[in-house]
Image (cartoon, rainbow, N blue to C red):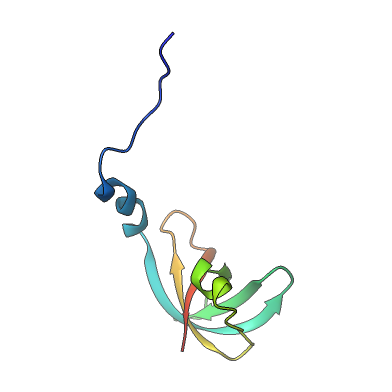
Amino acid sequence: MAKNSKKISSQSELTQERQDKIEMEGVVVDALPGTWFKVEVEGGHEILATLSGKLRMNHIHILPGDQVMVEVSPYDMSRGRISWRR
């Protein structure tokens, strides 16, 4: 029996998944348990966001009032990932 598995043929297919993101600037409104944050982005919308891997690895602290850059998927605009703190 042969396995039906999809193998990635090149590096460009790996990075293609991350290209469909929307980057927005916002301000952290509230810090929630489990490294989740409420972020108010341009236009007055609130997004529930978590920390990206680099911020976790480098122990970057995020506090209410910080300006951040949030990556949001076009499929679910209510959740995102904090990728940068200004």
